[in-house]
Image (cartoon, rainbow, N blue to C red):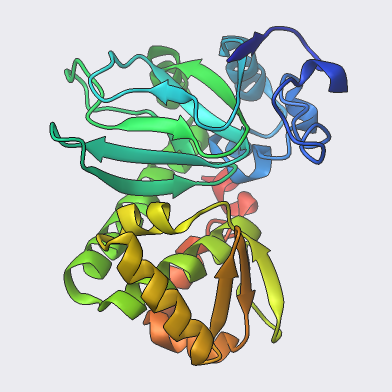
Length: 279
């Protein structure tokens, strides 16, 4: 884990990032932050509120894949805006079993806990090399009280995340194994790119393996393997080594059983910036 402080980051300082990420991860300078339009800070424009948030940040946090951001039971106090990379949130049982709750992509805001809760009810770790913008929760609350557009964006992101959680509950409770796997892969393809697959053979980079899919869908790794083979044999998709190839976009959407409203929430443009700024 590396902590970096300052107004700009040189490429050589971004230890632990991939070769394609340093250009995106000019994370210490908000002007060049690729995640800004997608995250909670995108509602602030370039005025006083934006400068207040920028000056409230802790050092940019850069992590290698597999490193913890916080563990279940850790004290809360900071909020995290994911700038580059992917993060996974999870809950553990005492016997070691784990349920993956969410996969996070750039622009995600996470780490918030209800007032009065003394420890995190879940854990989070870097799924890939990742960089985080860290803001004290108390400072975030102050900014929300003073800047309505910022608060509107914050609340909207919480509401969106609750709807995503409802959709995941539906998968675990009602979708069959083949539908669960298809639904998860389609969701991550759309959330990471902001659009549906449009052409046969289109490829999406999704940094998952079969055990991770199993922990997210409530299946065993063996069952996931069978479902992926079935989806490949049905000429719908292929998933190998973190690469999703979509053979039939229409059949994939139909099999996933996703509504237009949920597709809109998966996309990056669910709440236009001009709407947030006018709130």
